Length: 207
Image (cartoon, rainbow, N blue to C red; front, top):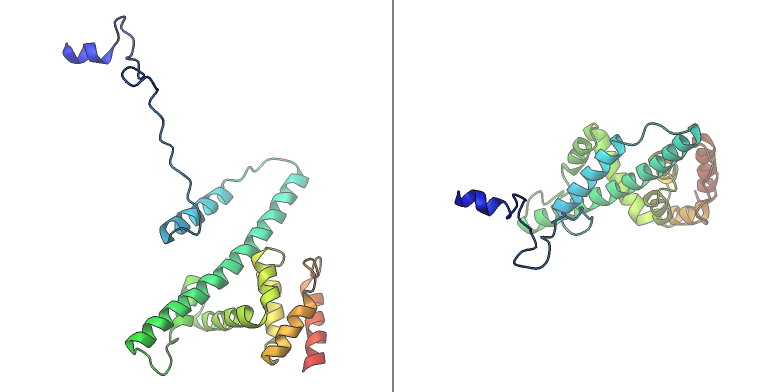
């Protein structure tokens, strides 16, 4: 009987939540995950994006679906740029630990390409090639890397630029990068074959 009286008001209505405090009990809404604050929140943020992409509205007009495809392509480019950063930081962290502990003294980067391949669901050989690509992107192709991270180009385009300039000296590769991407939209509408020819022509002038 005591519990029943506490559960209802004088007229059988639910008790007023404002009684005693004068204010309604606030609802606690969890803050959405934000990137850049912790590893746990980064993973939660990425999972939120992944789940959101899988639940996009399937209706709409053809023009609207085209816009979605275009926006997703930019997201893919940015994701590939972020993966370059993650791979480089993974290598940096492991090398620092190994140098400090004296592990793999002759090659502190040993096996990192294998791990990169596993993360990208590729072979060990492709993982090692990807790590070399990441190093060149950050060191010698800063404008290409910036365009990828901004979603202005995709990973295929970035890898074409890297592949066709990999034989050049670092300084020449940097100059090619500046010549090729002197403006943000320099590669707009350029297909793979056209881009390959363009990079080869520039590389020939420095080779």
